[in-house]
Image 1: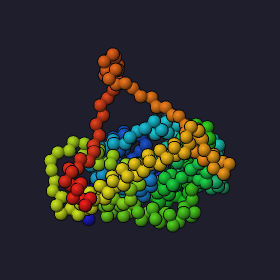
Image 2 (image 1 turned 60 degrees about the vertical axis):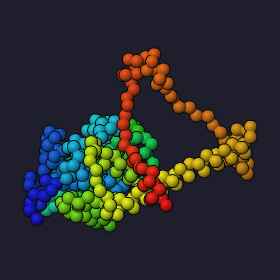
Image 3 (image 1 turned 120 degrees about the horizontal axis):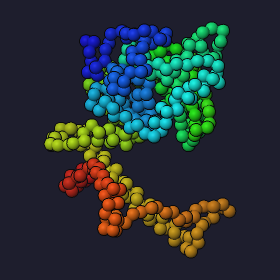
Image 4 (image 1 turned 90 degrees about the horizontal axis):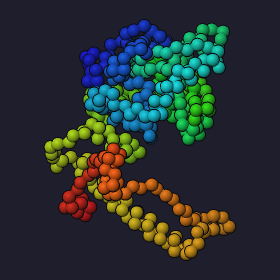
Length: 352
């Protein structure tokens, strides 16, 4: 294999000065964003790991694949409000952790493993005096997080799965034996933890194997990973919409058995959903019949079910367009979305 791969990565040993036991500085933290984004495509970073492992709600290996091989725009991240404030509060939170633990931290850029340079990470902060042992100047690192108060329950026993995977990958890349994590939940709930390699030996091996498989078997070969499970369906639908925003032309699927199977299963799921909705409405009507004129029902002297009113703001768009045309043009957008259009004869053939 040559040094240059389909992902623009290199198989040569990582260059740059060594900043951790096995990590060399690939790019300074002050590098322009476009250069930083391009450098990230040369390997798997710690922020990719939740997607690599297909953790529900965090993305899919397919997203990582298409990003690394260059099929997605370079700056394709959905920079949400939580991400914005997480970046904004990173420095003061890191400083506060250093103050509480009586040490000093400094930002660091992209680090690559010196023997496997596709293994990359961006440490939030590097600490040259670990507060766990002040008898020696031990090197450690700090990962900084801000989370919504509704997610506090996931931090009770330590960092949640996505953060744990991210930090363990940083340990793999850097050769550190532990990394500290600080999280501010809901703006006023301070938590700090320490993630140690020795506590997660099997998980470290699993993470390393899964990341290596995606990198070597798929990204370097240009072969998209197979779709497994339905948990990440929303993320995949969004991904393929971004990959092909302007569709055109026709393809033949006569011999594509996967596509034919998918059509049969899709129509089956549509039918099951329709039947389930009809059944739900029928049973809802039966419950209303049971209540008669009452508002609530009891079962064994305990509340069973009740009818509660809810409201939802709606707009009379026809009236708004007629009486307030300027406001209509300023506030109403006609958003398009894709849907599968299936001819009736196909429905009959694949559901018979």
